Image (cartoon, rainbow, N blue to C red; front, side, top):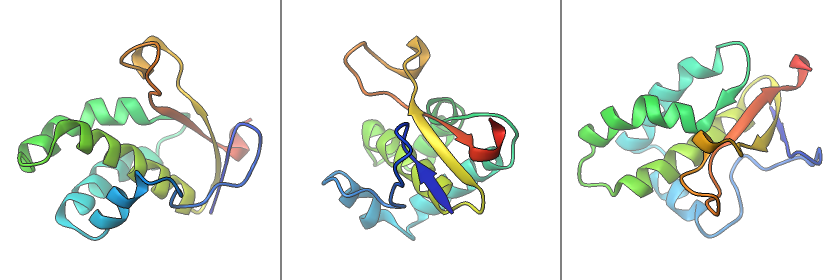
Length: 121
């Protein structure tokens, strides 16, 4: 149950930035559960996990189910939920920013993360 930064610094399961309040507010909600159900199959796959690709795959369905939520907020919640689930997963992981064109909406946008199991190197 560990997640490391590119500098190999241990990361918390829930971040400390103000934007994480959105995540903690939704913990246990129907939206959070839908995200967990959608993300879970990706954690059992081999190879790297791309948070942005998970979003492309599951957010359209979730956005239809939770139409009252802002789409940008859903994307942020998805990213934080992936982070939290990886950090709490039984395997150790590290992450790095996804700097590929498909990993960001624009050059100045932060984009998603790529997660890799520690034993995959």
